[in-house]
Amino acid sequence: MTTDVPDEAEELLTSEPLVAHLGTCRDGKPHVAPVWYRYDDGVVEVAIAGRKLANVRENPRVALSVQKDEGGRARWGASIRGTATVIDDEDEAGEVLKRINRKYDADDDAWSENTPVRIDVGSVDYWTYDDE
Image (cartoon, rainbow, N blue to C red; front, side, top):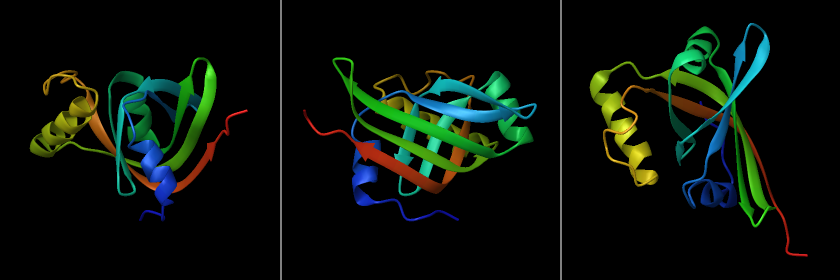
């Protein structure tokens, strides 16, 4: 089940190909790593491998942080909390990888060793910074 994400937050999350930081849980401790992401209508898609994937399989509660900077100054940011589901179906996984790669202008088969994960958004906080 997803929550309503404010229109302004959706516009920010879909505005450009920024790097996000995915927070998972490892042995009761936070584990954070940079990832490419794609947001659409209350769902975040990421592609991960290794420790991050193992963490999600053990505990699907995750957080994602995205921030836009210009010249070293923060312009906006968002924190998303949700529940992750590993996409094991090969056909669906391939489509998710293509969508993520296309957002970042990468070849469709880039990072094909990664496993896609769908994050159903439970809550989102976002903020913008005014010009000073």
